[in-house]
Image (tube, rainbow, N blue to C red):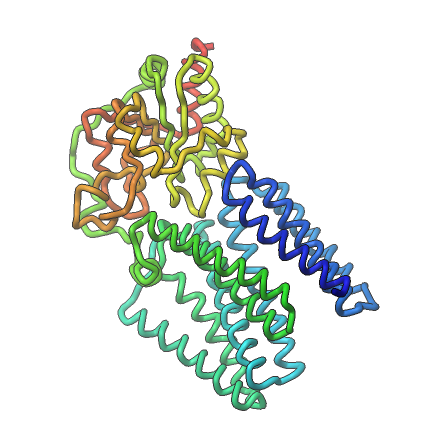
Length: 454
């Protein structure tokens, strides 16, 4: 085997190990390092394979990437990881699409190679614009609610079919270069149209799905360039992203078609406006007294924790309760936040022990024996309407069964609805106390009270 072949083999093995290790919070850091080193070997192997003589452009690209990437890694707050992920996917997809464009303009291939390039560019360009749209919605530069209009799905289907037809025409006759700019425009337009009807509640699934598209684009590029490692890496990325999308859909009891075309996240008529129902609230002093007397506490984080950047105060609360002999654990819902693993990332940044993070299906059987369920900025993922109301837009969605705890305390700024645009039955239950205020400030108040008010 050639030297670059050995490097490719080692890189492929490291990519597979990286995926395996990143499946657990305890080994995720090792998985990241394995993936990084595998990519380094892949780059070295590629340079060896193609016998690059002039490294000026290579070095310039590395420096430019470092100038952009290092500040993103160091200064991007953890609360903005979903936005950074969307930008990264957009850059990767655009790079893949531009390479495909360069190969088409250089070679004007036909047959299988043109088909592979067509698939690569279609996925690359649509993933680029779709990821940028996702970034805009996550950053609230664009409306986070779904944007829909009559006949939207038919328009999307027509755009996709015309783009696919142009690929077919270029496969048969690559000299029809006049069609190429139209193809690029349609692919990019389809990416925009793909994200318009999708609301913020579906962003975890959308990010995973776009990651899958970017991987499949790289895989197709591997076939076009006859690069086996690119095929392996793209297939791993594409398949893992697709599997993660399935997990996300199951976590919401929804199908891909419902995510892409269902416009979940719209404010439903009459549902966002809450009735005048009595609610019970508590001050930091009262809430701290309840926590102090508890033997078991389950903290349920949501997007509100991310917005308030309260993860470090939550860790302080955890430490204060543990010192008092309270059993504290964190219940993690698969779609809490705006990206897969969003809550895990935030809690890991605050150095919450990995063994304290418990998945939804494991914590639910124990919620009935829990003294206090403390909900921090979560809404739809604890809404009993998912189980009790067949007409609810979240009907059938698996939830963390916080309502079964002896006492439920919810840190929230107000009574506003979640992404699904519906009222939360949990707010009005007799065992629920609303803790109104900013999550970070209120949690700081709880910590202060547990410390004796000092």
